[in-house]
Image (cartoon, rainbow, N blue to C red):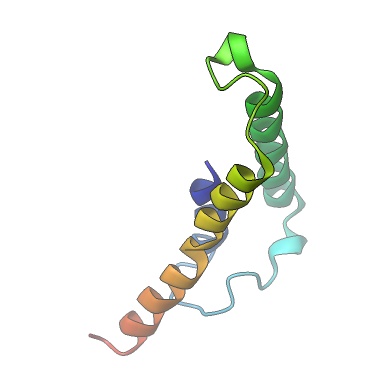
Length: 89
């Protein structure tokens, strides 16, 4: 889910722009959906143990950091892709 959320930020610009955050906060609906999805994901994992068949008690802080770090990793990957597209390779 976290990779998907950060990929949504990457996909806002489709012409190979390097600043994927430019103008992001001008679109309040996008920001609302992004943060709402993140908050719902946190609530589902931390408090939905039996109903959603996730680990009872949710994730530890280390696991949350790992999940978010993997999600953030999609941002530099997109920058590398944009670089090569800009070079027409």
